Image (cartoon, rainbow, N blue to C red; front, side, top):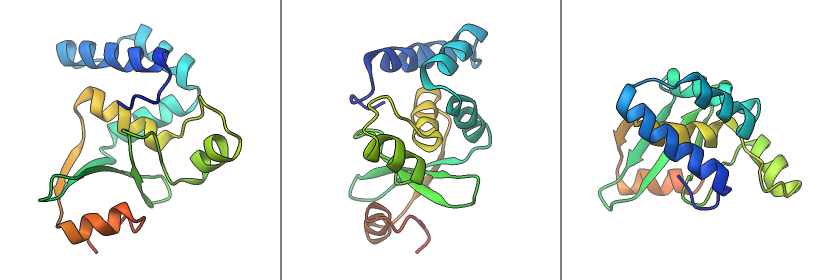
Length: 141
C-alpha cells in the first residue's frame, strides 16, 4: 500500500486488510466503499485478484515487484510503493492528465492483493528481476 495514495484510499485498504484477515470476506459496505473511492476499476481489480492474476516476484537480492496479468494477456509490472503501472490507462489518466486520484485496475489489483494477502509467489534471478524492472515484464526471460 503505497504512501502516495490519498488518505481515504489508504484507510480503506487498511480497513479491508483488517476485515479480510479476520473474516476472509469483503462485506458489502467495504465493496460499496471500494466502488465509491476507486470507481469502475474496483470491480475489475477485484476480478483480477479473484482470478489469481497478481504475482509477487522476488529476487535473491531482496527486490520485490508485483506483476499483474491483464485481460489482454500482457503482464504489467506494478509498483505499489511509488504508485506506478506502465499500462496505457495509467499513463493517460495519471501521467498525461495529471489526475491525482487516477487509477488503473492493475495497480489497484496489486494493492488489493497486498491488503488481502492473495497473490502468487515466484522467485526469479537477479537478472530476470532486472528485466522486469526495466519494463521487460516477462519473468521467464
